[in-house]
Length: 328
Image 1 (cartoon, rainbow, N blue to C red):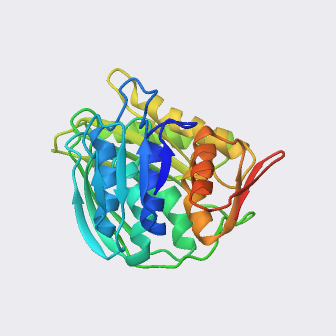
Image 2 (image 1 turned 45 degrees about the horizontal axis):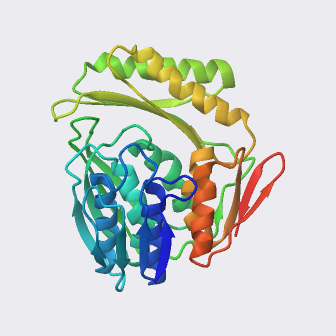
């Protein structure tokens, strides 16, 4: 059984999620110790428990220590099978992060997952980032991924619901074409707010991107009524580079849109074929299927993922010059 130090490098939930996914794929049991040891609230939060349960559900894994607050778990996987799962952390925990833990395992056999919680929350990609930035890279490599947002959910109430379905697939090497015309878009969404909020967010984001980069982005508006949450977000992307911003009480809608657009503009002006966040999210697929891509900065998340992949026997090459280039 492998032992993984959950406080290593980035020291957050990423290590736990990736460790159990790699355990399921490799059939190698793993113990994760010192989970989030150096965080303000150490140990497992409900969303971490939910992510492990999502992975365990794909392979009938036996788990110990899987309770909120626990700082150590063991995970003994069985055979990966096609499963239709329902996961609810009971909080506004990040739905996209739970899906990202489940997805590389689910691709081996296919299946679906319904996840409740937060569709757009702090310290996480939005569900729209998954749909428009992350998933297209995998679809280009041969993955069949359907993401349906049933309800939007925001902190602190949550209440979001997302259904994801995948077909079994052996992907082609991960590749991001350079020099092709890139898709540029904006999703401006909300729950429990007037429709003019999403309109103002989108207009501000679109105007800034057009003015600073000459990008004629299309904007999709998704205002949701009812539900349990109140909140808003903007996701903007250009090809495999994306950025997000969340609304909050007292922050003008225009500032939310401009924040996402400014972050995307910064990524687009920087070297590399993917944004700095997508770079670490794709590393597990690079390890499994090969390929190559680049970004502008070696983040701590990418360093952590690379270190953990090596623990499971995968080799990721990282060359740093004017760009950071990953290959396998």
